[in-house]
Amino acid sequence: MHGRLKLRPPDAARRRQREEKLRHYREAMDALLGELGVPPAQVLSLTGSVLAANPDVGTCWNLRRRALAALGGDWVPSELSFVAQCLAVNPKSYGAWHQRRWALARPGAAAPPGGREELALCERLLGADPRNFHAWEHRRALAVQQDAEAELAFAGALLSRDFSNFSAWHHRLRLLAPARGQGTGTGTGTAGALPAPRLREELELVQNAVFTDPTDQSAWVYLRCILSRAPPPPRVICVHVDREDATLAVIFSRPVKVNPERPELTATLDGSALPGPWRSAEGRPRPSHTWLCDLPAPPTESPAHLEVTWAPDSALREVTLQRGEDEAWWQEPIVERELFWPELGVADAQVLQEQVQMCQELLELEPQSRGCLLTLALLLAALEPRGRAREIREHLATLRDADPLRAGFVADVRSRFEAALAVLGAGEGLSLSNKGLTSVPLLERMSALTRLELPGNELRALPAALGALRRLTELDLSGNHVTEVGAAPPLPRLRLLRLDRNPIGHAPALAPLAAWPRLALLGLADTPLGSAPGGPAQLAELLPGVDVTFS
Image (tube, rainbow, N blue to C red; front, side, top):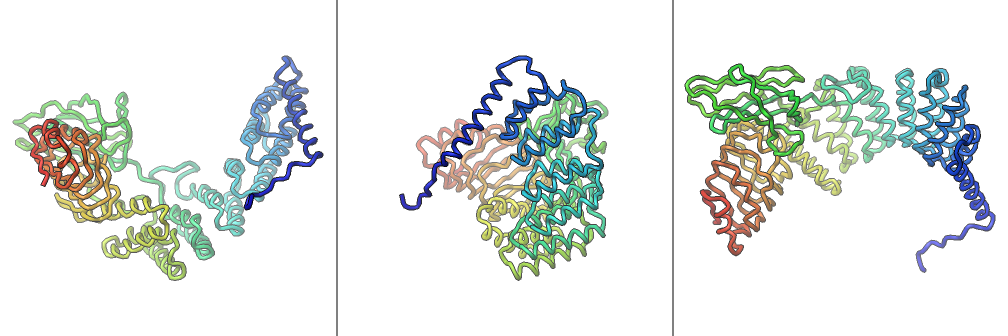
């Protein structure tokens, strides 16, 4: 009907050609699979006829490898030539690329001198499709033996034709990894920024790219990468011991997984090793910021000295619980930049300021450039978080409006910024009221808090990492979107919890709160549960001893 594309059936000649190909394919497959003891030379002929038409028949590649191994002789050059023909049919054939790597890895088989033929193959295929990831991976493996500057020039030539070639940007970043102290892998925590001359060259390349096409994200991602370093390895940032709860808590800078059979985390009490086991404060067998260990009853008439060691960094953390004290803790001093952009590896403030100026000049021309808005917000947060807070919020608000499909990501960036700002000025109490938070990052940096106020945000559940707040006594989550508690994180000192104006409609949703031994007051004003038939009575049975207020 109207608007439909009419598809013409293939003409008779084309149909006959297709039927002939199908007939040959079936005959070849029947011969390969239906008879035993087919000579290797015939196997090569039959598989060759099939794969030349359809390189994705994995069975044929398997049979071909077996035949080649049995045949012996120097078959590598001819096989590489055959695979190249198959790649001309389908440049992204997994089977063909696997066959090429297998042939090149055969004992006694060497790649062409200097890999020139392999590089030429990759260049030809990437010229036809710059995003052929098979060709990029093959070239990246060859690049280990090539001149890095020549490979950088190759990537630069592709970028000069198309700055949106994300694969070329990624190849360039991988080539620069040794200059950043990262080897050729994903890097280690000691990797820093590029040497100054190389960094200047890369920044100039990025500037040309973003001013050519400010809306493309590839160059912006690359810019943030070359300004960054590999994430620092996890380390212990807080140790807390609670006499009444008889628990030792160890809090890390990043989530870690402690193996209960061979724990890298060890602790001693007055020189005697604690037997463990360690358990996650999130209650699930997954990486966590906070790990807990039960203590034997600490002595009450003398100080109790605890030592904690995390094997990967071998640093010793000590805390002493004095006589008559209920708790003791040690906490690492906070480094401001780690809160806002922990991966930032460029320490030269002038370089960062130049990037700020570039972003500001570009925004005058393209005020809706998403990559520019995000990069500028991160740079300002790393340089002057408190002095430029209003400007950062404005850029993030503009970014949210310019990119509604990624509003959730922008909200998480904003949440981290607001949490980091609050942590800088926190004492024993911290307020993050009406900040539009969709999550509560950096809880591991709030372990000394006794009061946390989070009313008027966009939270839908209790943050899983709340278990890091071992000293917390008051928590206000009023005016969020919490419908149930879920797995209640261990908060041994919490006495007051406010859940007013949350859509909690049934008592069992709050049953996990019974795990908090000191909880005495629960606020549920303006919640559906208050008017639910039998709801208050059922809640009283589930939480005996807790004073619940519905007004």
